[in-house]
Image (cartoon, rainbow, N blue to C red; front, side, top):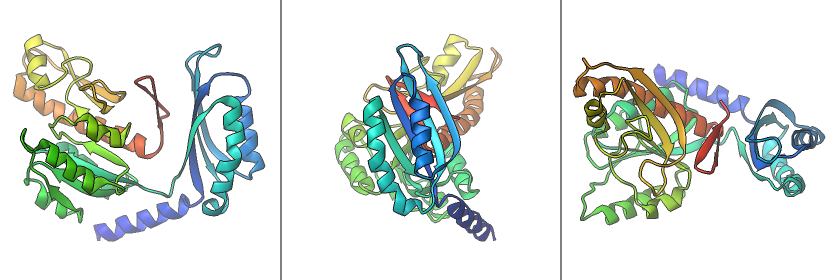
Length: 300
């Protein structure tokens, strides 16, 4: 029964989004950008549903924009719209992209032995709150196989040791090549090498069990306990070659006290981690994020 309800919701969502697109723009700020983009879409027969913009400095900063619009017969008309928009883009020195809302992003979730972040993503996906396709779950342990396969999702066990790490990443790249739009490190607990990252620039999201930039690296709850913090948190960020230093997408915190030991900090932290990661993934698949100078502009 649950599966049939989910399929019905999914089908309804596909129909609603069939002619919907999202445009992300970044460029040097100057007068006339919003007017030019809006006029262009109007002339193409598009109906703007939502428009958000942000500037770092109106005089000499960068301008960012997200527009959601409907266009009749989008699949047929979008290529011509994109080709014609290059004139506007060139005029304003834009970096831009257009995404069809109906085209679901394909996700690969990497996990280790902790299941809380994975479960949150699976539950939200099953409920229809994550409008994406979970193409696979990849793990360096076999513990989650039964759980994942119960959702009808392919599970791949690829053990990782210091001696086999290069071969493991080769197999991971082979699995994901051309089949995955976003990699999610749901407490994967392995350092991703630059060679792997270059295949998914700004398309790997990690959840770090700390309010970065505090307590980078391993055992952050132990570090937080030793420091006597009064707030603990979690950070979802894009992965870069520098450990735990990529563009931050989302963070959250919870108040703690000297009475909380390390195990209690971990227990409270798990709740924060799962929510923060799910938010970051949702914003990415809805094309709400623009990366600029190791920061994100999030249209939420």
